[in-house]
Length: 204
Image 1 (cartoon, one colour):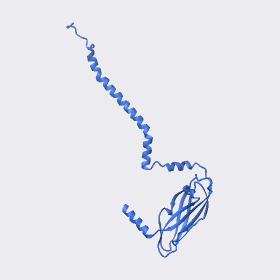
Image 2 (image 1 turned 90 degrees about the vertical axis):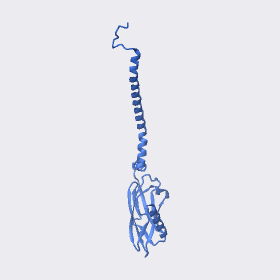
Image 3 (image 1 turned 90 degrees about the horizontal axis):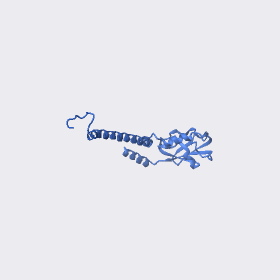
């Protein structure tokens, strides 16, 4: 027995097991790694819409209002009569609309002009405040440009034409066939202007 030579292809069972253990362990690590990659990919795909929405909201690309406007644009347009009015509050400004009435359709971009004349010998600083009739229709007037966005300074006897540009939303209630847009100019006290300027400088 001792003199017999063992075939090189026949090895003890323990040696074979010892040789296979590292290979089995390596395969197990590869499988676990592949499973982790698959699971991670699935989680990323599931979370991607929310991540994209969060990114767009942070950068301002995700414009919900714009999506609503696009959806509303599919609604049919209908005729509406616009009326324009102007008032001044004891400030020396002669204020009136160039057009008092206008026939438009919902969804149209509307351009109108108001005329202001300072009848005083001194500078007047004013702020225009809008109002609507009926009042609930104001939420459907989407302004793109308006002199009411900021205070206006008028030199003595200055005459100025000021535009208003807006879109009349197609979702305007059906019971509103005539809409009145009115502006009232209020004089801004000089102290308020100084305070606003000082506050703006302090924020720089």
